[in-house]
Image 1 (cartoon, rainbow, N blue to C red):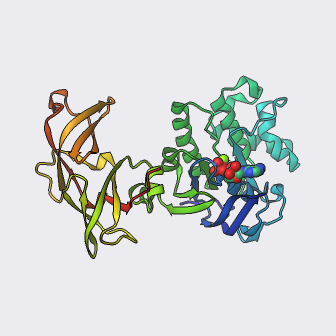
Image 2: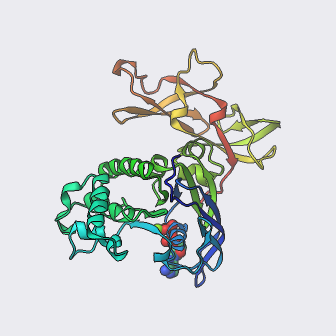
Amino acid sequence: MSAAADAAGVRLTGVKKWYGQVPAVRDVSLGIEPGEMVCLLGPSGCGKTTTLRMVAGLENPDAGEIRIGSTLVNGLAPWKRNLGMVFQNYALFPHMTVFENVAFGLNMRRLPAAEVRRQVDAAMAQVRLAAFGERRPSELSGGQRQRIALARAIVTKPSVLLLDEPLAALDKKLREQMQVEIKQLQRQVGVTTIFVTHDQEEALTLSDRIVVMDEGRIVQIGTPSEVYERPRSRFVSDFIGFTNSVSGRVNSIDGAFTRVTIASGQVVTVPSGAGIAAGDAVDLVIRPEKIVVDPTGLVDRSVIPGTLAHMVYTGAVTYYHVDIGGGAILIAMAPNPDLHDLPALGSPVALGFKPDNMLIFPRRAES
Ligand SMILES: Nc1ncnc2c1ncn2[C@@H]1O[C@H](COP(=O)(O)OP(=O)(O)O)[C@@H](O)[C@H]1O
Ligand SMILES: [Mg+2]
């Protein structure tokens, strides 16, 4: 990580915020390294925006401390925090040109005109809109407006960049393209960045680390692959898209290994999970891409037999819905082979998986 000279770390310690009777942020402690890009990820209402607004100084915490670099910023006005901000609806000033919008923060600092011009031109080149200075915001597309908002946010060389769902209004293809651009820009500039999103793919694409939140609390912090491969709770596994779940009961636990009898009556061995005892009702979850249909010749796989009940062809990949008995379906996903290799519906198939990829969680009450 190449942090810019003025990139600052951010530290939240025991931060809480209530709106009347509503606990928006219950107890958040989080350290972000200088130059790091962190996404706050979680469902709507979990406290992401409130957390970001407290870092920005737009809300005051009811408890706890917020530090930017070594400075305790509780109570410090937003404009004294040296931040850049982009929000979903952070409107550009409509009566100003694009150039004037980007120049705004520099003009406030009373920089000489030639210096303003140089820095604005550099920021607009960084967002690949060098030729757009004389346009009005109304003459730009949604994606271009957000790029200008980004240029305006970075032109003052902030120590921390705060982004709240800045791509939410864009269509999927543009959003994916902008995610890559923002990540590259962030690397280039080296600015410490906090990015709020409810979209797990966006968080995986952008983050050095993902902070998963639920009901005003942090429930997991980790690199994209840690959060994706090793969700620590059923909430995180669901949120991050583990779509397969098979219920069972713990048969026996032998140190690192737990034997679970699943609905079909078969016994499956999985890595032991925290807080799970013999006799417990559990759910086993696994990602479709971690299951191989017909694992012949692969070693170290557990195998569950079943019948191919349904196939969903999506072009690049096919999802195989396999009835494994006892009313349970497991879905395997694989890149598409040549068409003649597809098994026929109703045929017997074997599903193979590495035990490590099967996670075990306490059975969730049906809602
Ligand atoms: N200004 C406000 N007044 C009252 N309640 C609020 C206000 N802002 C947020 N909340 C509540 O605080 C909780 C967290 O909201 P928010 O931080 O906006 O979540 P997120 O950004 O994760 O969707 C929600 O229950 C929301 O309804
Ligand atoms: Mg929000």
